[in-house]
Amino acid sequence: MSALETDVTDLWDRKQNGELDADSAGEDELVTLDEFLNVLEAGEVRAAEPRNGTWEANEWVKQGILLNFGLRETKAREYGGVTYNDVLPLSDTSDYGDRGSRNTPDGTVVRQGAHVGSDCILMSPAFVNIGAYVGDGTLVDSCDTVGSCAQIGANVKLGANTLIGGVLEPVENAPVVVEDNVSLGAGCRVTSGFVVGENSVVGENTLLTPRIPVYDLVEEEIVYGELPANRRAFTRFVESSVSDHDLFEGGAYKPAVVATDLAEETLEATEREDALRE
Image 1 (cartoon, rainbow, N blue to C red):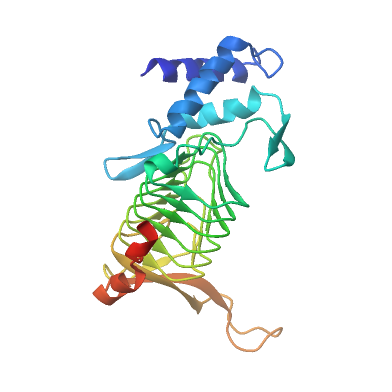
Image 2: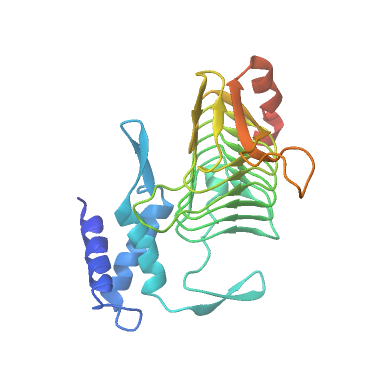
């Protein structure tokens, strides 16, 4: 256990025991929280990591994020000539150019405590929340939201109007994960700790959540909460347990996801033009 983890855990225990709040938090406590935000933003600690093939939450990291809300006062702040009220300022993006990343104006918002890697593109309007991790070479397109603690891998494409849900509480729950080299089509929704396996391509307007079954035609099984790696996935509707009813004609249907082999032509269709990276 690192010294920072020990300090954050101690602050958490004090707050949970009613010994510490925003009014009583002093300089020492805020220095710890600032140090925590710096390493979180640098990508040196993450809200979740893979262990033995399974993504697990780092509870102390999620505790540190919650402490930044619980031990700080809301203040009026300025951004782009607009006053907003929050416990934290937005992330300083002045070094993005040095890392080959770019964020377009008028609505690209990265909250302090979010990590954005090198060679990334963030198109406005887009929002990356505290605790999120965006890997190198990833595209966050227009009208995208990357929720609190979401873990986005390297070389990922988030299509326009994509929602990556946030999972901050309870602290023991792993957040949404999109692994390396995934392409999500426009309008996708990934929520409630769902894991999208590496190298997968997901069709537009697909909802991925643990409550919706994934019919994996490769392994011929039904899985929940994850899309296996190297799959092409898309939405289909399957017959519901509610059959014919006096209130409507025909059967009732519920959403499902179908996953098949990832064909070479699918990969070619999702490649981004080299000009985007020049």
